[in-house]
Amino acid sequence: MFKSKSKPVVLITGTSSGVGLHTALRFAQAGYTTIATMRDTGKQDDLLAQAKALKVKVHVEKLDVQKPKSIDACVKKVIRKYGRIDVLVNNAGAGFLGGIEQTTDADLERVMGINFFGVWRMTKAVFPHMREAGAGRIISVTSIGGLIGQPFNDAYCAAKFAVEGMMEAFAPLARRLGVQVSLIEPGPINTEFVASVRATSDLAGFEPPYAEILGKYMGATTNVFAEYGQTGDDIAAIIVEAATTDTPHFRYITSDFARQVVAPKVVDPTGDSVVEAFAARLT
Image (cartoon, rainbow, N blue to C red; front, side, top):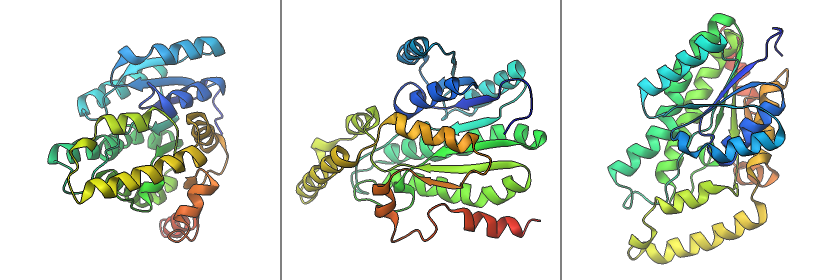
């Protein structure tokens, strides 16, 4: 993929745990200069310990995707130090469990701020450097929740739908300018993310008629995660594949189970036909 003799540079958001942590380790193992960013660098110990055990190097930088100044400072620092960013992985994310009535404006703004506006701002900050280089990969971790809405995930699905729409609109132009755009769409993942969602959602505050309905939904969801859940490393392997293959897909639905869930809505599960149709109009 990369013709330069120097190591390619990847910048990954949200690497303190889960998919982001494993993605950083896999890129480091693949020979990338790996910039692992996180909002709270006090949470870097696990990542660094695992990197040391694998005898690979990751470089931790502070970056809060909700703060434009933090994004600009980090991107400028990486460009100044390494001269380029070859791959951007938009992984930082936050969930929330609640319907419209249970979701406050503050909850909505937080979920949209991290999952959508963070992706928008990161992409806007990095893309000019890739455009000037005439090459690069932008990979965003969304969810099957960005393709098909799910009960009690109103704000989360809204944010992921927004990312899907943004990237589907952006991908043909980016390709015309030499940059490949991909979406990673997992179904259930057994990482710390699920516990974080429950911790930030007021599940005890659900009143009738919602409490009973939520209980049934949570029971079914627990069974799905137990039977079909992937690991953070499973998803990380797919992200690295999207970054290193010569002809990346636009869309990577990460498991057979996830493909079955979205099948009624997705005719071409790779998304390539949509991107190619609009890209053809730009040539």
